[in-house]
Image (cartoon, rainbow, N blue to C red; front, side, top):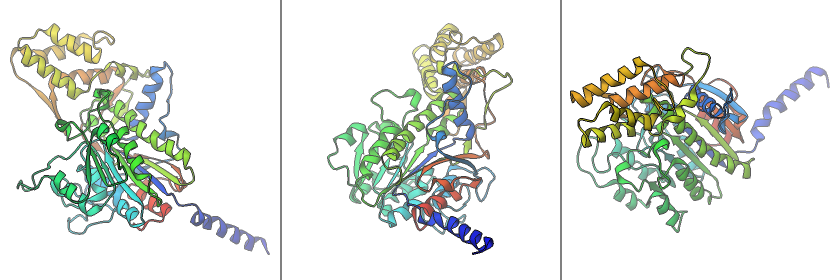
Length: 468
């Protein structure tokens, strides 16, 4: 055998090896909604700063052996929305903003990787920290021409026959998109064979966890989303609770399972430019990935974990002039901008003529301004002017973002804390920044080069032998 023939045979064997690699039996697909590279970076720098260290304290997923980045534009726009972004991650095809897993005309449905997993006999779970009928989770089980068709999206659960759904609840449980009365969605889903379980205790008390389950919040006032991690109390259901419940329910399948987990409120807090709340959401998301990693350690040759995002939100920048980062200041924030707004509103109701010292005390208690963190005269003057308009002139100004309409005093105060914590935001909207991709386990070696978001589900399908 000459050298040229030997080289050709060697290369043929080398390129044939992946086809003989073990296919993953257990697939975890994590999507941090709005989580750009700098969201991960800020969270890691923050953790180091708390320890008085310069550097990055790695999240569990940023330590995965394969890491890259991807583009996220939609078919219609350079900056995607969550519908087109989620669809790309679910079906491996581009569509226009606002469409859920269909072509840009909203007439041709696309099959998601979740359906491909179900066809192979795997159990399937779709979970999120927001409502189950929101754009990203919807992309895995629904086909709709408009992401705002919440009732119609939820109704698509019945055709999916997926095994586990988890989230806060449903946005429009009794009204169709054209505002007509419709049968309550919980009844529709129950008639389709699903068991509706409410809250962590409800799931723990459920005797047969192998049947088709929909886990929702036991607090009906929070059907739109779980509470922000920064605002949660011990009895509140969190994303890790939902993730653990899904793993328990899906693990009984001999054919394996596919589980999508969305950290949906990373996006919401980023729209509001609330840095401290955003960091806590990323760290909360990381806890769910840790659960998957713990599972992977028990089944390392049969498990694939992929972590990514549908887009970046806010144009987040770490560093705003000084070479010294002060992200530790974010630890002084004790509640989200949303809850701070409600506290200011309550003060206005309970004490319409509250003094500046009253408002100042509330901001100090919730953000650490003036106490843990010193602010200058210009920053205080900005807040005091807003106080005068609100409490003296009774002009209740607000600061509107995609998912909130917060009190102007709260948004100004959080903005000052952001600045003093070395954090800047380019906007309150999505950006075209690269999205991160991390992978570990069977088939993870495919995630080793610059990608487009549509490549991600294709690579997962290829590794698992799914017909996407």
